[in-house]
Length: 128
Image (cartoon, rainbow, N blue to C red; front, top):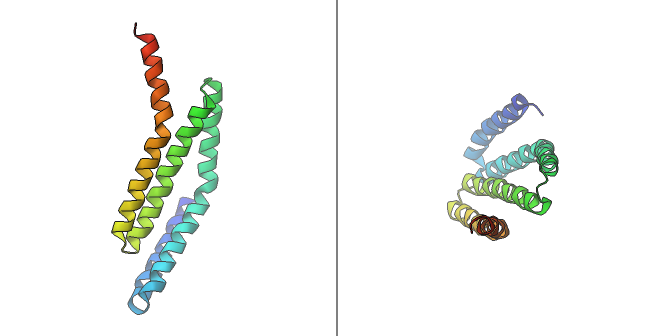
């Protein structure tokens, strides 16, 4: 989907949400959340394409696919958590958005530990 179509969808939903918010605020919030999910789903093919290119490059560079898979998962977690927290903020739930971001940071930290250990072990081998 072209960016102009996505922006057009966003603007139409924005105008409808502003009008609807005056009469039925919960419906306006639901409308904006639905539009956000639709835009996210429309971007999935592009995201998958980038991941495939990165996996191919990692294979050509002879990088351990376990590490590359972990890095791609970390990037995915960051994007999904940001998307979820923004939806919560749009709904007026800033505290819940902060909790989602906190949980994502912890998950990323846990997933990064094996990579950090591997890098440190490589450095230890290089330094006598």
